[in-house]
Length: 189
Figure 1 (cartoon, rainbow, N blue to C red):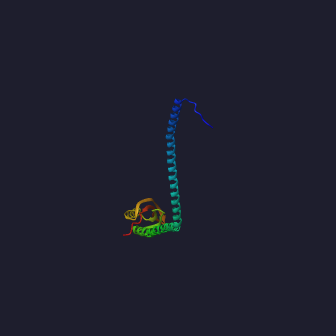
Figure 2: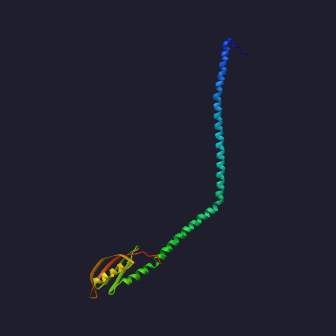
Figure 3: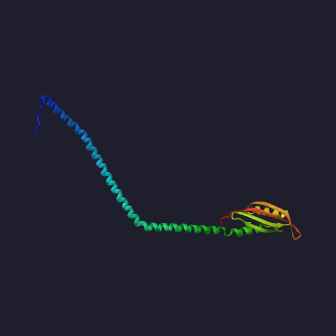
């Protein structure tokens, strides 16, 4: 098909210059679009290479973890055995510490008992409280016993609970109940 331009010459030139100018305007937006596409493509390639690098690093760490798994298991097992051993040693040390306390308490209590006083009960609870019961002929002997307990470094907070008169085999006696605290074991020198 043949084209014929029937426009006068002046309009033809004007029309041609308008068309050229429009083509020049198109270059800038096309350039911006192409530059944007290049930037996006560069960013995508960069991200793809970074993902590939991280995937390789993860695979390497997994392989290293599988290679170290037996050692990790052994370390965990040894840590558990050590915790069990520490628990056992703690129990042994606690028993060792309390092993002589009862003997020391009874020895010190025997030293504090004055003449003409008889103990009928010496009982220590799970803590450090000691309950003492006994009989004697006089309140003065009970007072002397309490003074001796207070002077002893083994006992503290000595309190008289009950002191009442009674009769045993036709003899008038004083029955008493004393509570005190046993001080903790002091470290051996």
